[in-house]
Image 1 (cartoon, helix red, strand yellow):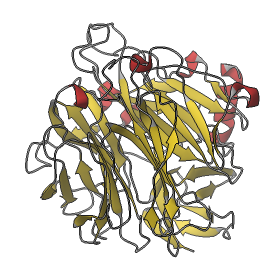
Image 2 (cartoon, helix red, strand yellow):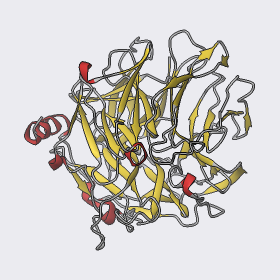
Image 3 (cartoon, one colour):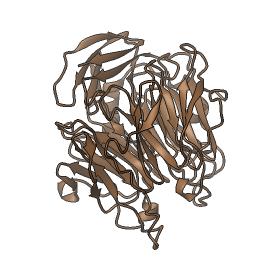
Length: 504
């Protein structure tokens, strides 16, 4: 698709007022009671994810942050009121060697649990609904292995009482021929009743750094995307898509074009308005935006402005290194914007050392414009994981970013004039209480926008909670849920300015 055709789609679907020029964030240096840094040697060059979720039911997002060689920490949201300065208290310190974590309700009791990835044995941590967690790996029959795990995704397959878990592993630390060309195999854990047996092996592995199970074709059958780091697989590897049942890869014969990059993160959302999710794949150098054509993914034209291939400020013209990526409407103008965490691996001389984070604002023509510097979130450290989330409950998406050898930071969205908004959280009876695999559709005027409820993507960290929609000037919207089994709810009118829980 040409840029003219692509821009026409965006312009038709998303034309509305824009507040992008005035978007502003304020860093809150006092947000955390202790300095939290993701640190460590070469086994922590990658990782550093954050999990954002409400662990105590007070409707305010809390944060679990990986620490690498230092302890992982759980921070509970203690922001006093809507719009008040964001702050957290320290709830717990965990073990070291954690690379990241993803929240999901594994046992269907309504409380969010954590899948914790490590250099070493991974853990399934059971949540008690009051920000307490205990290791339930043995209770649930989960063998966390001893690999260097750096990617995760999950879904509920029909008839199962536990989710299917995909774990991506990086370099095989035990391979004497490594590290180059020594990518480890990946694993798919399918439940056997309430327990997990030995995993299915996903091989060969190409050094996975992000995974996402998504119904990208809207066919009712989710598939597993794996983004891989060619720095270690050297040759022969590529970005993958796997069918789950039977477990087999898509190939060029059925339209899956081979793309090789330094894959580090996946962001997925519909940005063209056709209901099909696009993907942003972070890398070293060009970041790759792919447009979903239903049966295949096509690379977006460079002129769309999402490549973010070099630092946009300073005099370091070497290529950028992208990590966590996430779509979110930060000015509530109905158009999804894009955050990308940037930072050198460590001292890699081929890439920029001073590499500011990106905030790419989507315009009415479908093109993205860099606003990271003007918005105040540039921060040229070695950023890794992150999240866009409304920490203070005022309807504006805030930002948290972890970094290698630099403190965890939060920026509060203080944009003075934004559009209206609403947030929607689907809930259903167990086992899949958070409706993973559902689609939330929001209709304002003649336009309908769709967001998928998933577990995975990002860079070694993800979110659970309400799905945020900017509404522009609309004061209400029609909402419906397409539940994981395909049943569709009726449209219902929901007012702007609130987070709504929609129960099946």
